[in-house]
Length: 329
Image 1: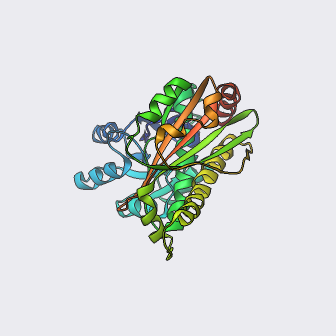
Image 2 (image 1 turned 60 degrees about the horizontal axis):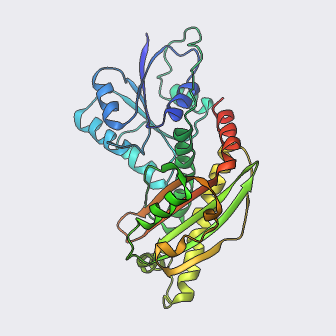
Image 3 (image 1 turned 90 degrees about the vertical axis):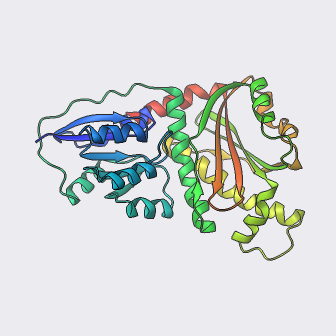
């Protein structure tokens, strides 16, 4: 009997990758949803006896979908497939009734094993055919950042024993004048500390900029069990420790997905206790145009917030697109 399967993810790239990972001879009728609300509508309409669910989505996220499924007792078996791989994320979705939790990008043998484990493999039929994946550059960049962001959050969560709140990455192509305007829109009264780290490899180059609200340092010091006075030296030490985790893990996560290696420069403190506009002298300013990926990290129940800005040079985009297309095949 044909099984209705629903793939719920805001990334078209991720939806198609997930579809390609399904057993080729599994007798299914595939449907797609781009956010949690659409996903719930699909389940209610009978399109999701099995649901592959992302967590980080607009309108309704995966946690809200799981809560609604439980509240309405909807007939679906949920397998979470997410870039957010924090231990707390796993615990939360399992408590909300998910059958399994798989990290992105998911492999076909992992899906096969889960389906067999829970007896939902069902009948086989002939090959369901090739899943067409149309390349959407901005969507692919966003999904690339989403997975890398999750890996960095996982390391930070384990280091500080916290739950990291993750956004949907903001991706855009910016002229340098637009980049200046975007940074200046950040509240002028907020003081920041910032670290910059360059990266290059396989024809892809850029800068990673991490900006911290100075108000975050007291909470960071407490979580890292720092007992001394939080003076300038202590703040610099804490800043570099967190930057090492977030910048290193995020850049490694991107490189791993592209199957390349980045050479990374030594992190440089761009500005401490300075206004956002004073950070505009960073190396990105010499470019004409940049691919900008913005990720805002927060920590649940803490006054800790930082913004990670990945800036790729314009001449990196052909190589970046080529590697992403290869990863989709």
